[in-house]
Length: 395
Ligand code: ADP
Ligand code: MG
Image 1 (cartoon, rainbow, N blue to C red):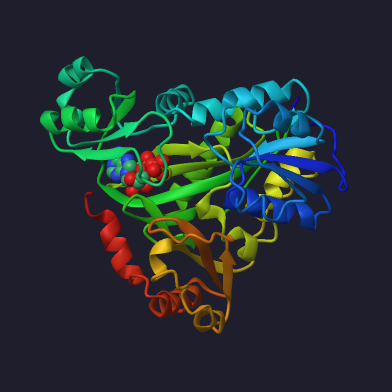
Image 2 (cartoon, rainbow, N blue to C red):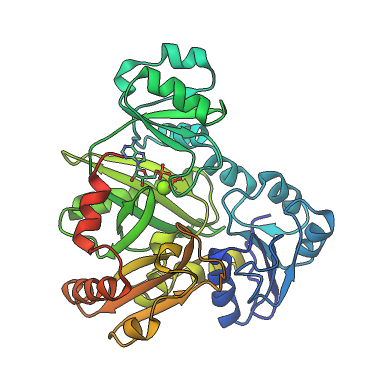
């Protein structure tokens, strides 16, 4: 079932997974008048804290799945929710996105096969599943990045490898699990496109996100993208993301990450079957956020093209900003015009943990950039220009 009929406000929507993406989905759903149930084993899960009901159980727990089956429609916010749970639920209730599409996004090898069958270029790569694969892999893929095929996120489960000896060591260090080796590309830019597609096949998209990663984790997103990502590249990325959504017969919000390689070529990196960190700005800078798009595609509500009404720069707020448990001085950033602070309700500020984000909106990209630079300074974040350089340095 894919939810072609309109599920009107007042109905209950279920979410598998209780992280910050689920929390922001719940906020959007509640604003539209829906009730929400979140399934997540963590008693302090960010979405569980704000949902009408939090079922503290594992994603395959029979009682939890029964509760979700009683909802009007069910979605997921967690990329690694077992596809089996979605497939089992889909027999009883409308589920979006579907298990098949989620399973593709969960496996880098399947994801790259999906890129190929849709005619979407990606980095040269090979599957590494055994020491023999290490011996025979084509030397042109080195230096490369070895990534576990499954369960990687925020740069976790990845190793940069210079030669075959390093590749063998990295494969062993990653536990000998199935991996993909990609050639390390010289990146001129990283961009992402969030698209939403409903069961009727209507597709809309957010503007192209210009992303800077530091240490494999998203640090800054700028919308509109800076001048080094030209209009033709942006149009091509948007068209490719829409093509992938159609090819997967996708219902829901899908994010496709792309690399712009030095020289200008566009290659797909990976897909996320859910709203994406790079799209968080849309809550404050667009008239329809990526989370409202998720609600609309799930409920069969009309899908209208979002309009960006403000330029935006989004800064991720990681646990590194907390010192001895003490939060940053939020008042110092809240005094800045156009500052929108989002905190996810997490108590334990570990380094690298996503605690929240700050979106700066302004009438122009230059104004948003200037205020974001000041916000970064006040928070003790790396200067924005330095973050760009760091992201380009080979890891
Ligand atoms: P994750 O699932 O952790 O987001 P990604 O595959 O997106 O994993 O990799 C994280 C980051 O590592 C990318 O955003 C990019 O900065 C860098 N990276 C990944 N693959 C490559 C590559 N083939 N060449 C150059 N940089 C890469
Ligand atoms: Mg990524």
